Length: 153
Image 1 (tube, rainbow, N blue to C red):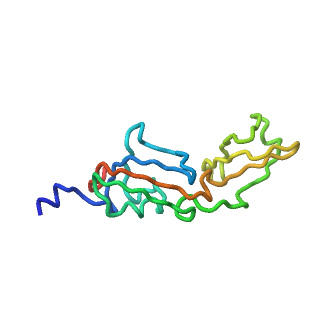
Image 2 (cartoon, rainbow, N blue to C red):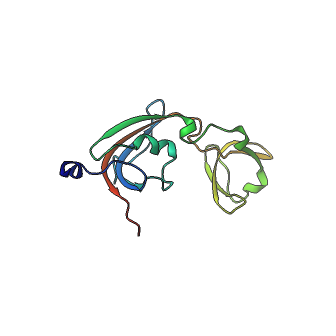
Image 3 (cartoon, one colour):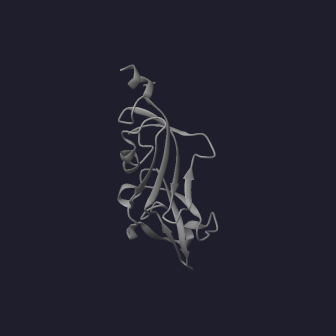
């Protein structure tokens, strides 16, 4: 059994995972990566990763790598046309809106809600509140560095 211990733990609920990851779009464009910086450390199930990203990691151990295709349903959801809102141009007096700019709004609960400006008209500004990666199939490449039981602080 000492062999099993030297191998370390496998990724499952309640484990703290340290890994390098690269997130790519369908065309290979890198959206996010830890390759050129410190690896990511998080606890499985803590909300840092959407469940669709956590599920394929289960059962991997330190030193293992994987490359997973994550469909929109398991990543950031499908693009929802209802999340594209037309706001009054007057609401943007503080700043000159630019197409493609990300603007933060507060939702009804006071939480920050980022939106991307899609179009600017004379009276209205069209803002897309979908996640920028909604509707995209992503490739999630991981290299597991360490798996430990999570300690409660």
